[in-house]
Amino acid sequence: MQDLANKVAVITGAASGFGRELAIQCAGAGMRLALADLDEAGIGATIALLPAGTETVTRRCDVSKPNDVEGLAEATYARFGAAHLLFNNAGVAVSGPTWTTTLDDWKWVLDVNLMGVVHGIRSFVPRMLAQGEPAHIVNTASAAGLVSPPGSSVYCVSKHGVVTLSECLHHELALDGLPIGVSVLCPAFVQTGIGHSERHRPADLADANPLGEAYAEQMRKAIAAGRLTAADIARITLEGVREGRFYIITHPTIKQAIEIRMQDILGDRLPTNTLRASRR
Ligand SMILES: NC(=O)c1ccc[n+]([C@@H]2O[C@H](COP(=O)([O-])OP(=O)(O)OC[C@H]3O[C@@H](n4cnc5c(N)ncnc54)[C@H](O)[C@@H]3O)[C@@H](O)[C@H]2O)c1
Image (cartoon, rainbow, N blue to C red):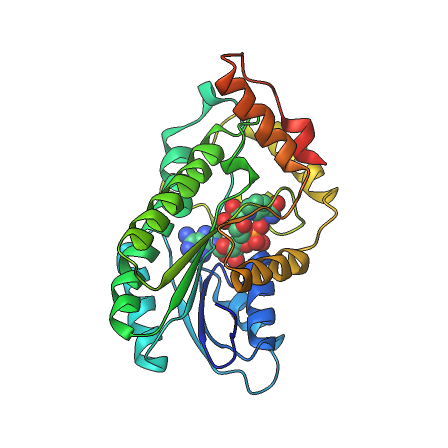
């Protein structure tokens, strides 16, 4: 999708981080926006950063709830009659050793990071196919969807799931010659609110990994050391959309870690700890 002007972008997780920067840059490209998040005040703050005159529809939406995502699709099509670029971007992170993870950790993170993307696909793809104009979907995974660093099994399972989900979707659409492109966004550590995801944890899923905080502190240090900004990620993502790239790997050094993992698999070796490579 090369020309974004006047097209409609739908962005989940639009109140912070990548979602906010995607909103700013999509608006800068002349797009109309459907912005969704749990955090309504944060959506308002994003809107305040958009160029004057940007057309928007906003929705409080918990992406883990299929009815909320369906409501987002209804609101988008009621307002604009189309959705051309869907960013399934909202996400949360937890940390800690696998054997002390809680069932609440698994339910919360998989429902947001993985099922949130599933709900986006189920609600938007049928409408996109009916609208008679090409469309493109960007699913936010992570470098953690391509490698397996210690202390992040819940997050990694969710993000590896987003990568394979996106690959399957791409194949299905391409096999049928359908006019919807797919990309999967895989950044490494970037300074956003992701290191403080607990702010979003629902009260009924409050049982957190008792050893999570020490790992989360390490993650926050790695995030603070990240060189690329959320604005850089948004810019690289929109370049990838315009170029029709499937894998949008924003930090080139992560490719070394992916290569090592693939060599481990093909060479029948024990897995290498690639965390150091993914921090660069
Ligand atoms: N920042 C990084 O280092 C990094 C790296 C790789 C991937 N990611 C992924 O990027 C995406 C965006 O995260 P970010 O880094 O901008 O973090 P962020 O915390 O700044 O933004 C995430 C947004 O998602 C929203 N959100 C959380 N749960 C939600 C839910 N259930 N329904 C709707 N909205 C919800 C939050 O309110 C917030 O506005 C996530 O999927 C994250 O996993 C981040």
